[in-house]
Length: 434
Image 1 (cartoon, rainbow, N blue to C red):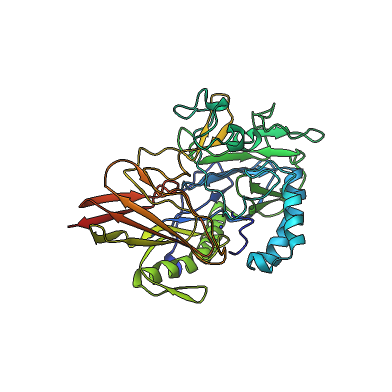
Image 2 (image 1 turned 120 degrees about the vertical axis):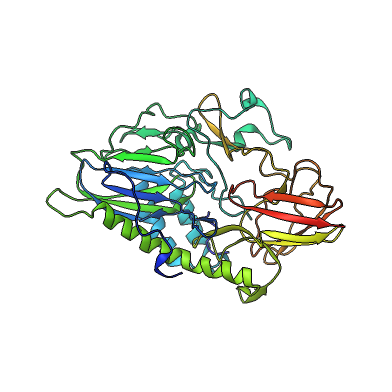
C-alpha cells in the first residue's frame, strides 16, 4: 500500500466550466471533491496553494463524501509540515516496505506534536486511513448522552474512541499556550480573524449539514504579516495540506475565476487515473499491481494519495439463492443491507466532544469478524456466510492491502439494496432469484 501512514488520498470537461461561490470571498478552496460521473473521495484541498491579501476572506467549501475534514493553521502546523511534506514528496510514492523505518519515526514524531484523530502513534497497525463522518457542530448524536462512561460491545473503553476536542471543535491557542493533554476542549472556541501568530487555529470538523453546512470562512486579519501560512486537516494529517501565500496589497493575487481555473486543473489531474480505473472495472479489464481483476468491486483505488472511487461496480448484480457473490474491496468500506437512516461516523456528545461511532465498524446481523491475516501481503479472504434478507446486516469495516475478497450468499429471493455505511453515495442493488 502506498503511504498507508498518511491516509489516511476525461478530457477538458471533467469539471464544470464555471463555479459560482458568491462575491464576498476572495477565493474558494474546495475540501474534498466528488466527480459527477462516479462517486469519489479526495483527502485534498483544491487548489492547494492560493495567493491572498491581508483582509481577504477565504471560503473553504466541503464536498460531503462521508469523510470529515478540518482546516487547521498556526505556527505548530507550519513546523510540522516543514518536516512531513519533504518526506511525503520523497517517499510518498513508495510501498511501505521500501520506506526506511527512520522515515516513519521522523514523520510520526513531527505529527505527534499536533492533536489528530490518531494522536501521536500513527494509524492503527494494518489499517488504512480513518473513515469518519461529522455531525453538526455542538449537536449530540441520538442516544449519545450518558454514553461517556460505558464501554462498547467489545469492552473497549469509551476514551479510546474519543477525538480530541481540539480536533472536533473550533480552537484557538495563542503563542505560549499549550495543547490540552487530556483531549479536552480549548478554552477559546470563538474563531477570530486569523492573524498568523497563533500557535494553533482550527476550524473544528466542518459540519455536513445545518445553516453553514459544508462551509468554513477564514477571515485573514488586515495586519497579518506577508508570508506562507500552511494548513492541513487534523483528521487526515499531513497528507491533506495546503498553503495560503499572503502578499502585500501592491502585489497581485488571482481573481476568484483564476482560482477556480486552478481548481479545475488540479481536479482534472487527480481524477484522470481514477476515471480510467472506473472504466476499466466496468469493462472487466482492471489491472492493478500487475494483476488483472474481474468480477464485482467494492471501491477502487491505486493508493490513498491518488484518491478513491467510492462505487460498487457493477451497481446491479444478479444471482441465485445460495450462489456465492464475491466482491473485491479496494479501500476501506462496508457491504451493508437494510441500512438504517444515515448516522454520522463521528458523533458529537452533549459536552461538545466527539467520538467515532461504534455502530459503523463491527460486523452486524451475524456477519463474522475478520480473520487474522496469515500473510499481510496477500488479499484478506472473508466468507461472510449467508444473509436471509431480513434485518440490518453489515460486513463490518475492512481494509487490507492489496484488497479484501468478501463472499456472501443469500437464502431468500428478492431485490436488495446495499450500501457502504461510511460513504453515503456508495449504493448498489442485488437481485436474488430462485
